[in-house]
Length: 507
Image (cartoon, rainbow, N blue to C red; front, side, top):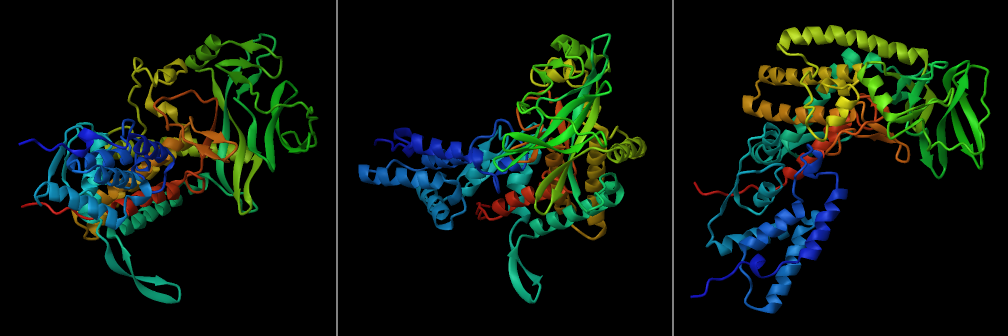
């Protein structure tokens, strides 16, 4: 008797499924890629489609084969990943092929969890194994906790004038609740280091430039290293920093382009408004490929000298501008002595906080592990004098991250005190821990200001750490990449994962 082949052994709609897999890169809300970065994660579309195609037989007619191929394409689409009738049909097809008995699948190298997740979605009894602790945490938050604790319960909701019953996952509710608790506790302690302006405008971020001393013996001016000067580069909003020299020092103005002319909006020198040439090009900064040019004397510092200055501890940093959140959109102003003073106060408090937590935890709360100098991707950091992971953050960023970490750790004890189950409390805290991770990929000296989107771009969103000369320090209490944003992204993912129907397994 001739053995029947599976669908994927005969044919597969490669082109269509590949297109859906590629489209996933642009999908954000609800996708597991936004829960935690995993570099080798497989696309959900291809994982779902290939799993299904490998577990069903090839039809007996060409007509049925074409219909099945179309079904596989529909199954692979992100917008259909929670479509009940489609998923149920796929589950039934797999069960029917196996005589009605649920299949078991083991992925011994599960990584980011794409294949196990799609096996779970298709009704398979899924077992995922990993030895990387980061991957284990991702798998628990992707596979185990949503299935174990994520079932939706009817809860009473009070929405203004209306009281009604609404379906909500208790897991989502608790991640939201305790995420807000962490935010308020952190704000009470360190929110004062991110003060609002007198008009109530909240700083969304602070733009910094790394600095080196000019190597011209007759100059020696502090050279701000900036790859470009644009703050906002949109069709109806062209705002830039403009560097100018005043008494041997590089100063800045904020300028706005009206037609072909640049208008000075603010100058760092009171009463002095620099004349901006019509051919000023904000996209041309003071450094490119580690070669710097001093705006004061025009002297060049080659890449080897620049790196040497960093390695010798002769490089510094300068707060240049502040990004403000206003109802009408982002606004910009130059950094003031007041802004720098609050940063200095945060620096002082960091030392106090660091010592306190070190005593409590028995480890340095600021990552002091050495960056492997032989590692290809992060080796760049050694070239610029950054030998430990804690060197990738400025003082206020360190303070924010260790404070949020501390508050997340406190949540577990608080939940136990209130009578929560220990394993459930661990699940909630795991998601809050991922929130700290999301905060950390932006709260680093490698996150730069995206001038067309007017937001902070993550400094750790690639499989490498590239040197960033000017960086944007996010406000964790009011920026585009703040704590609330981090938790909301996690809840988006949970709202998807908790809707996957439970898998019926054999005892």
